[in-house]
View 1 (cartoon, rainbow, N blue to C red):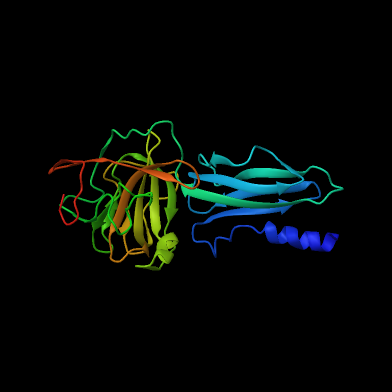
View 2: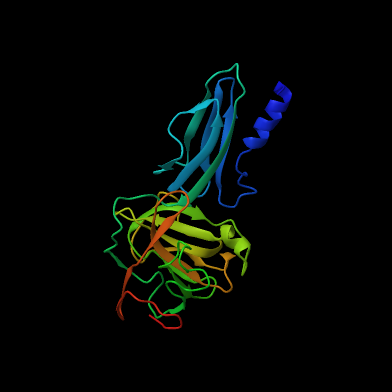
Length: 272
């Protein structure tokens, strides 16, 4: 194989993940190629807590760590993911990599014993879709225990529990009842003291009232509800979760404590 063809093949196999302008997730993996090999770096626009799993096929290259592997961002918006060093420069070499990512981070337990407040001001709110709903909370969705609350666009969203803001996306203006819109949902991601995360999804454009690294308290206004992303009607998607790896997140049941009682089950069409 001549060097020109080998280089063309290399560039094809090693093409990076789309840039943020084409990839609404805002997470981007790029490669920096030198005479000795390749360095892969990951950058996130919207979140400082996310988890990446890297898979790769290498020929005549040695990875800086065994592949596949999973790594947590743990507060970093940008970091080196891996290095592939050429083993023998006299021989053909190439690489192909595939990153997978999820918001949030891993933890050693799956318990969730905290109380959560209604993510709005005082009042009663109707469940649009409860846990294991067939529209988007079905088994394998990563949202099995999430609750969608029916609220008009522009409703003030409040923190359901004390925590630190680790993700904010508010630049999307599109949404609809098609899964292609899923990556375009605006959201706020909050990390709690026990390592669990809560996400508040489908916020309106420029609807965030907080920024990354802000500390928030229960009941504090954090944003405005909307209809961005994969949704058939205005509502707030609220879930508590932790990440398993870059391909999977674990949706956790939660206990909602309100002036009207304590609830652990949420039925579509009922108010709480």
